[in-house]
Length: 350
Image (cartoon, rainbow, N blue to C red; front, side, top):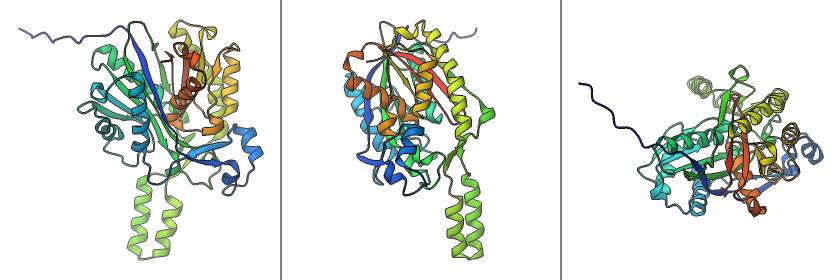
């Protein structure tokens, strides 16, 4: 006789219960950026919308920033760390390939023995994390899930590289996802287009660096060793035009699909919170979605730059802080970036 497995206890609805954010205190303005690249404050503002970006000091780590944002989110949700069953951290800048940032974070916030894992989905990582948290709670595998988008992009850029480095900032945003009487997170739209895999990518692999440094070391040439390290250390770069065209034309379709899955229209939204990649992309997406005037649009990029996985929760946190009346309203959030990957969903703002 075959034994019958015990079923899980599924939950009908989930919601975002609390928000938190961490922004490093150091601000880098466009004039400072122009000491590294041949550009101007006027050009950067016109092309990207960015005026300043936050950069974390050397002694503030990815997990330090994640912890600060997470603690605020837990407090906002009225949830103790011990009530968290799963911790998800979305980041591409944790300096250790293993162990995960999430396992360290879980310990710091008192969530042990919560499940803990990282997501590498670049600027869509936070939306991927929301989709995962929603699924974990709905399936009955977790009651409360901590989702953090965090990046210390200043650790992996070359300030002299001009395709993407001048856009980037550091920071962390966090939410707590849990069960709800009424739906607070709609079905997610997540996907990828690997044909454009290297449109945003590191320009070299760690294996190439390792081999080059080994060769230089065995040759005994210290000058060659230093030269190899400077030239081969992986740094982020992008094909800006490819990314811009893809984001503007394809992500409007993804955003529309997320609205359809949620069963709502643009006029039902209180806020639109896209990934903070470029002010022109944000404005074009808003235009294509035909957002009514009452819908607030996240434009955190002006002061924070592009913070990759942290950009959506940071922008939502700021929107709610400056416009508390949107609490309880609906927000469409969409992330897109390296891979090329994308994710979107409609949530109810806590």
